[in-house]
Length: 239
Image (cartoon, rainbow, N blue to C red; front, side, top):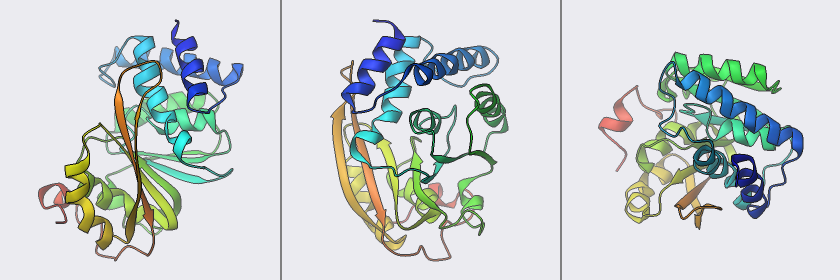
């Protein structure tokens, strides 16, 4: 199958219908990703068929397990090359999306993507989560905070939960072996005002890749002390 066919059939398996315009947007996104990747490293995955599965379908897997209402506000923290935020925005045009990353060249790429794909209601933020999470304009402002970053869950929770409004959710993508991370993160989730709602384990369509989606519901406001200063969550995670 072509990358386009892999994406379309895989999205259907996830319960996501992509029309021709949306599929065209993903094709253009792939072209831009590969074009910019030749200048500086955005992804180690460079085959369009692999991009369709490991980046696009992985990002869209959220929609199988989470109801995202029209006009919801989402922040993608440590977005990198735009995953999962851009695929979710293409699939949900009404989504109000913020893409945040500490590396400026990634955001320059994303500005090009947003402009070329003519994606409305997308904000791009340059900064570290620890700093942005203490800014009133962003703190407690989002229905969803999402991250596919490689940090451990207790660290990701401190970086992302403060952005969620009460009743909102932080959603993290992980591999199949998450039990130890969940145990390590239990206190952090509680301290930050969250509650573990669910863990979904699944195989990505058109692949044998095992993934986990962790959903933390925000039940009360995060104490003002969190997130702590830049670098502290990684050096000294909440235990």
